[in-house]
Length: 111
Length: 113
Image (cartoon, rainbow over all chains, first blue to last red; front, side, top):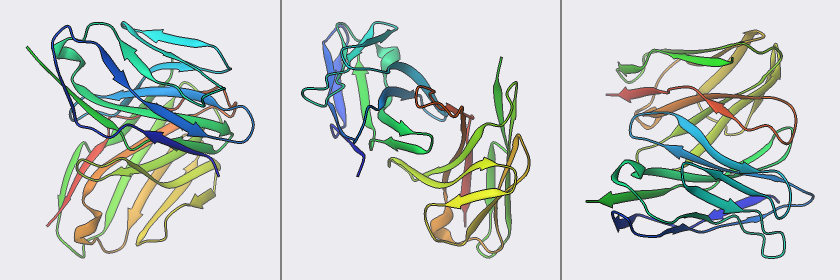
């Protein structure tokens, strides 16, 4: 069945460090892929998305490329800030109601 | 633009008491609606989803139930809360296309004592 496997956290980085959070998926067909961010005490917000192979989603300095050959959608940012501290969720949508979320990765950025 | 509301924002209830959480969406029609629970430090667990008025699909058998009395209203209920029902409850909506992302409400923090 469809699923998302996400890098386990927590991840702790110093400010201005490079960030990678790995996400791989299993799906039949051609899913859309998403990254969501959850700040403390809040709901999830869409960070970026890609709807077909080789698409790159980007927002707020974060990027992720839809790699069909490796079934991956890794999240990257070149220089993290303290304000990026949050929980990040990778997600997949393969149909009207086939929505799957990873378990979330907690990122803490220290000054 | 679309917005999604949830209330209450926080709730403390004794074991065995009833529960009613409400979610409403504005600015869209015929959305797919979802209830998730997030236990402390854990991922999202899909509880229910609905593709239309009166249509509810349950993903996890438990003492919770959901109803959709109106197109843009989704209610999560329980007749008798358990300690294990504590968590952060999130409502979400999405359009029907595979390209549509989900939009989440601000959540309700439920503590059962």
